[in-house]
Structure formats: structure tokens, C-alpha cells
Amino acid sequence: MSRRIDHSDPDSLVKFLQPIVSQFGCDLEESDVTPIGKKRLLRVLIDRDGGINLDDVAEVTRAISKALDADEVMGNTAYTLEVSSPGVDRPLTLPRHWRRNVTRLVEVTLVAGGKVNGRITSVTDEGAELDVKGRPRTIAFADITKAKIQIEFNRPAGNDEPAADGTEEN
Image 1: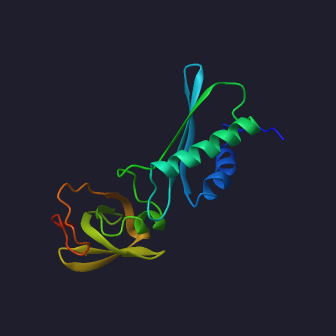
Image 2: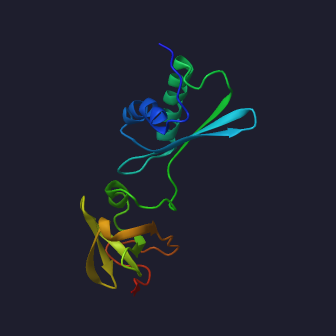
């Protein structure tokens, strides 16, 4: 059966891609189609607990490409398929993003104002515990406006030792 993705409905693309990506134990983090001249770029971001490697990306790319060719969902217009993992600059918006970054340094902007820098020590469905200057601080996801991993060039070898200044501003 041939079908086309309704590009005005982002859920249409997700419904097509999700089962393909999940058969490899991955989560579909993001997908979009962007016109580029006479072609289109289909960009797909995947991730999973424990991370993904280049072999994983290659496997998922082949499976998506095969499914797209068999189903003709992209229509007759030429397209380029790009599959990758989200970069470190991706905002942490879901509990699974936080779980995948335990031991990493994060900067959190709070709804009440101010920022907190700390190392993620544990995560629940409701929030995360950070090590802020050697002290635990639990922050509910509902209290967070924005959260991003901080890049560390001299990250310590041990997971429990903070590498950077865990400053807290209010």
C-alpha cells in the first residue's frame, strides 16, 4: 500500500518513522522535512539509553531508506535522508534526556528566576537531583524553564566528582 506523508501534519511523519526507529531500540527524538531547492531534506534524530554509535545510525538509516523507497511516502520529489543523534546542545526536555546525562554538568534556568549549575546525580519522572557545590538539590521538571548540558573539557575520570564550579545564582 502506497501512502504519502502529509507534510502539513508533523504527526504523519512521526507515525511513519516511529515503528522503524523503535525496532532498533531507539527513540525518535525529532524529525522534519525541509525544502532545499528542488529537493527536500528529511532530517531524523535518534537516541537511546546508553547512547548510539555510527553502526546504529547506519542500520537505522538503511531501514528508513528501505521503508521510504517501498512506501513512496516522500512522493516523486528527490530527497536526502540524514539520520543522526541529537548533539550535546539539545535542551533537556524529557525525563529520558536527563537520565541519559546522569553525571554530566547542567545549567538549569528556573521558572522562578535564576540559574542553577550542578551535576546530575539521579532522575525520576518528576525531577532531577543535582550536586550543587557538593550539596544535593532536587529540582522538579515543572520548575524548569530551560536546561542544557555544559561542555566540559577537563571532565574528571570519576563520576562522583564535580569538575566545574557548581555555582548557583538566584
